[in-house]
Amino acid sequence: MCAIEYYTYDDYATWSGEWELIYGLPLAMSPSPNVEHQTIAYDIAFELKLNAKKCDYCLILGETDWKINDDTVVKPDVVVVCNETNSNYITKTPEIIIEVISKSTAKRDEKTKFQLYQEERVPYYIIVYPSDLKAKIYHLGNNGYIKEGDFSQEAYHFETTQCATFINFGNIFKRFRR
Image (cartoon, rainbow, N blue to C red):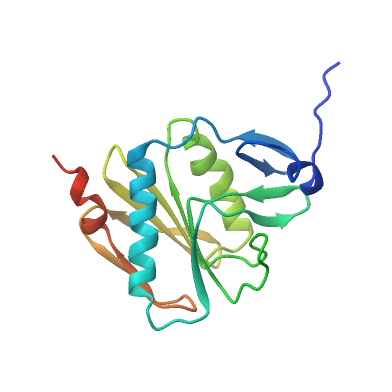
């Protein structure tokens, strides 16, 4: 007989290392993201912050816990969250979530988190593919996510969020073009 253990936030809070907890199942986040992954995530966060100058209520955060409920805590690469008042972890549904694909997390980002973020009604989900220098942007519609397109050199304006901002993917990927 095989038993699957179920964990909660209280368990998660005691673990060392980098983890996510999805539906009570612990998922290791190792090895650490490579330099290209971290550079792209940082550049996206920087550009979002730079372009959201007029908003005093939004936070642009990297790798911060979002406690969805007692058995689900994720750590997206970049989030835009508005009117957050908790200083330990994100409690509100983010306006925008960006995940930069790594080989070790691709399936989780494309399937598990896609479904989770859709269920949690995250307005925008962006999956970035460093090896292809491309980002897929999904916008939440009435029946789930609708793909806005693949972006490589273009800019995308997020105007239906509480904080209007944009990302110019030409700027993000410029240093990696050969």
